[in-house]
Length: 88
Image (cartoon, rainbow, N blue to C red):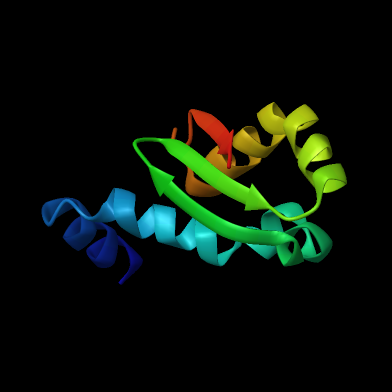
């Protein structure tokens, strides 16, 4: 069943969008609830993750952990889904 769904997503060329939506939905699991609660905006466009963080302290911490966050997201997706994180 899983393979059939993945094949359908590939045929209709919506797998990437599906994976991006899954990452946004799992944001609290990826970064933790305290950080997710301070994230007011999140979206993905052209392999770039755009974030608006309400707390400057959390934002600075996220800037320093940028590469680890990208690795975690790409590992979760199983492919190179994010190449850059941009803070708004």
